[in-house]
Length: 540
Image (cartoon, rainbow, N blue to C red; front, side, top):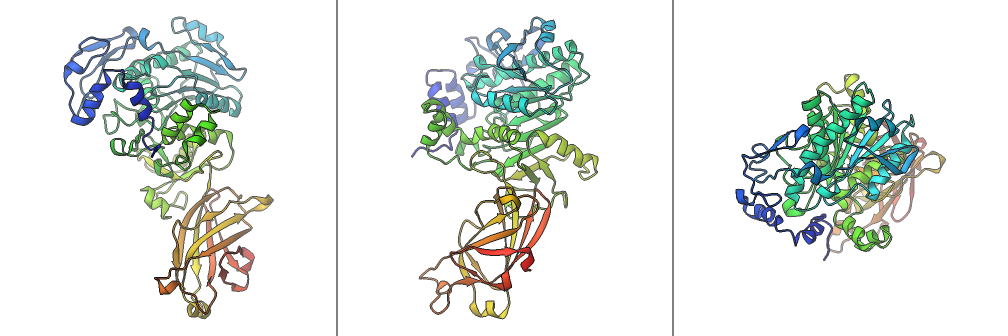
């Protein structure tokens, strides 16, 4: 059976068949060692103590920390001519036919329409990709259209020639490309008389995340400048997880670093391509950071999505979880529905409802996407976050397709312990509910639990659910119950009485709106099976 849990590794393997150098990586994975003779780039033997220098871009050793027990292989980067990185520039008035930065002609950047007072975004791709991929154009369009000042610039870091297998060589190439990008940003800073880099924001997917980290590092090391922000879109895991911060993206590479984890399953056993390790100021883990909703759909759906292109549909099917991160981000820019997460110790604790009160008991609500930095900064300025050095792991639910944003509901269902409820006894089944708000807004049907639950008189049951936003004034809840009987379990037999559950009240918290409401059935009526049972605040 074809599964998409292996990410784009299958695509890579197909590409790698004719590349002898990748045998070294396969050997490394299986045996954990690699001889120095195998550590070569373009036909030259390369010893670990060797250093490659490329003029103003500096020198690139492959001793520790570039080689260690977590990373027992490292190559030198190709030359600047070989990586051949390009920088197309998009502005509000030029979204389809970009101009290009000429690295050898600094003054030419003054004629590219870049507004130094505006936001400047650098966007880059990952392994076996290029800067003209549709997702990059979609992100560029969203950033330019959404810019409140209409002064933003988007610059793509297109390193397609250096992104092909072997993976180990690509990991080396991004070190140089990061250094080149730092020089480009410094060139903009000097030629455009920028005050600082606070409005410069780098966004990188997979290996591109670490490339952005290298750019941030070189800006500080070579020019004494610090980037305003880096967003890591599911940073690549192989050869980067649990390595020295110099080797990978980390929070020291910019004033604010946020990470979106979407494919953080363990790489070797489950094929996860992204890091699960928290490495930023704020690390977002949508749906726990792996197994994204909608990624288990059949391959034919992805092929249709790409206009019947088997190649791109195949790639998205196998890399669905890894690609979700940039889809989430672009979606959060285009759609104005709430996109909020809350910090919690673990995903399991979040699912159990242990972290649902914003900005209390160490649980902080952070807006997802472009607003994350301002959201995080407000918490620090208001004294709510008292230790800015403590990393935050933030969790949220999403939907299976665009718009991905979902509101979070914590529902406490209290079963009555009144005499009638006690005499009737418990029932087993599955509850689901739909929240109705003003202007006809509805949450959509949300399951209280994945499996049937035994609802016992006098007991309370809590669930966290995700649905569409209904605003800050929910009007009613329609609660339905599907009765489940089991011939082997006498507790589920209803021979003389019709199945019903005496739900006394629902206490519902809305995370995004930070409110809690209490809703009750009319005159204490029981919830009957296979019907919508109405709960309202005025019935309490």
